Length: 319
Image (cartoon, rainbow, N blue to C red):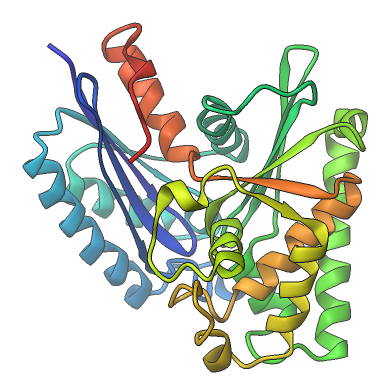
């Protein structure tokens, strides 16, 4: 009998659920902006209000899991929980709510799940896929070099860069300089720590995951309602990335929210994410990024299905 599995991701900016039936394919995808990482960069502690927002969403997800008769699941926490002194307390409470295994992923584990999820349905290309997963607190880079997955987790995310350097309002020259310096330092650290990243400079196909890239596609298409098919595997040029970085950077969050395609809860941090994306494109000398709605959740679900019933990880994941 095929398993039904649930992958849950307590990210820095959003809390997400993906349910897959080994026989029937994808059953549900849900995303809620919870901003779990609010204040973590400054105080190294998860705030009670941020945790409660996340717990409330996890209770909703538990009900959805019951409706779909989930028999196995995994909840993962990433950058915000890794960095917080009370991260283990949060994880224990989150695990109790959803009733499945809960663990904090290392940056490498996060990159591996993301790479596996994003590359499973990529169209063929002679260029190796380089995954850039821009989260709220961290950005993962991952690429296979000589059959070996090389990855690095940068302490850069749309929330972290906004809180530490760029701010959330109209971008000033001073804040811009601070954000750019912060991002360049982390890119320098990535190349120093994982030298094989240099081997794909100018040669990789950049694949962008998570809310920053998805929202940028929605803005380009003026797509006000979520449509996975309309956002998945869309090509964005570096000129488009920089256009929206500059346009949104000159606006207040309230004005940004008026653009068709802007998601409420991202209007204050999307600009920071675009600064990260633009810098990654420049450092790797690429002019385009391919969006992917398949990500860490797909990688987690495929792993669980493969463990439950070898061969079942190839079920349709498109929902």
